[in-house]
Length: 100
Image 1 (tube, helix red, strand yellow):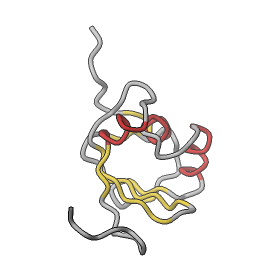
Image 2: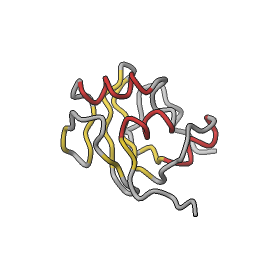
Image 3: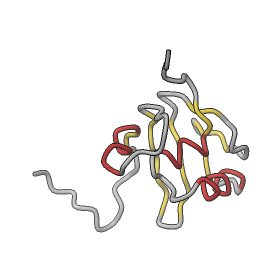
């Protein structure tokens, strides 16, 4: 039986969902203190995330806040990867705020 995991390492989740380009980059982001899990700073790439957790990432292009919606079993294509998280970030300058 192949059941979905209840938790996933944060470095794997960041890479699988394409929040970062490589897994070593994900680990470096976490160990560098640039990631918060449910408001608490973490520094271990092996820290587990679960559905419902909120991640705050301090990325070079700005701060991104995301809620974990799913735990993929492998790295997904861009369109599919976006289904595993919800963007909670405040709109950035230049974002189109008009409604369709």
